[in-house]
Length: 323
Image 1 (tube, helix red, strand yellow):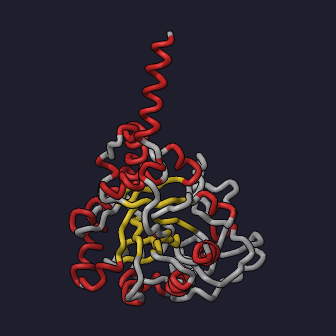
Image 2 (cartoon, rainbow, N blue to C red; image 1 turned 90 degrees about the vertical axis):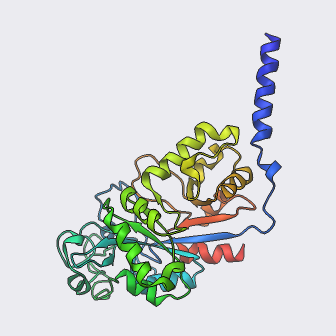
């Protein structure tokens, strides 16, 4: 029995040392970079949230007048310290990319129907602030302020010569990867402005094939990377699903990643990947939680070198700058 315990102790000790964060040490010049999800936008209650919830109908009392996925909201995000702004795209009937999150326009705008069943000119006439209410429909504080504010992707890339963007494909259509590649072929000066892409597997994979160095990550790869690393990372092996990409790690479960944080970072860096730390994972929550409060800043480990995903860049950006 004693021999068995000794063997177990040796194995556990070896695993600990092989995955000990302190062995890798902190990077020499760690940099926390931020990804502003949808720019500066209206916060909303997550209680009872489902994938079908119209979040515009449950916003908190507005603290500002910015509307998600608009050029003013992106500009405000960069001014608050964002390194990358995440935006959502849908293909239109005339072959453009409308920048809007929702599958239909009914929730936020004064229009009706599936977003991608409209042309860009029609979408441009809508009021993207129409549906926002913080009091169950008694008042609509942003109504009238969003007319003509839904941008086309080319407008965004043209507007921010020094900006970097993470493009979220909301569909599963591979042709959208072709469309993004065509935009950057037509305007090679915009290539550096598209930091990466993610979302639907088919368009992301197609975009990766055609845009050198994009390192986009689809839903399948994102989940596969985490699960594969949990199974194999104890050995130091970095699975193929985690190579040359962006690895998203939930802040409250990061401790499960073998070697977190510094050994893990070093392994990902050697595999051509960087880390995106996002907010606490909660089973059943359909949205992407970010590091969104000053309290949640404690989820960022000392010496962290990577990206922090946030829905409240106006709060987190200045706080990190001070830190």
